[in-house]
Length: 101
Image 1 (cartoon, rainbow, N blue to C red):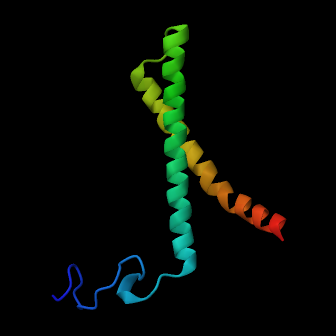
Image 2 (tube, rainbow, N blue to C red):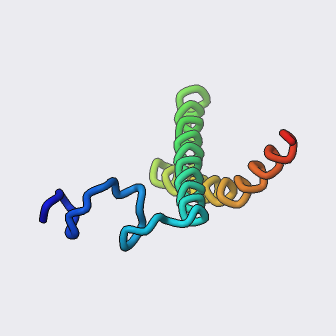
Image 3 (spheres, rainbow, N blue to C red):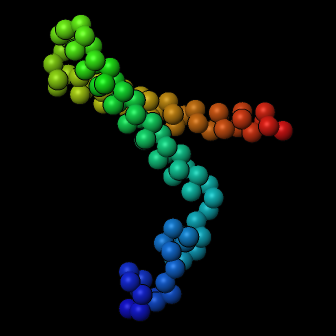
């Protein structure tokens, strides 16, 4: 092997080419970016719920669920937020592009 991690010795950056050294289609990159964005929004939603629940515990007292229940609810919130973000992101982007023209 001439280059690190490259069997054919051509080198190059792995993010510039897909399988077999050919560039990835733009649709594939867009879907991957959209999925990554949705996953990050899901994490934001889940952690925001945990922060709000902890703030409620500090200010108002106890909640009817324990820490395990809060983690379960936060996971549900994260999945819902990620799903909603994935479903609506392309619509918002299309609406923004229309408004600019």
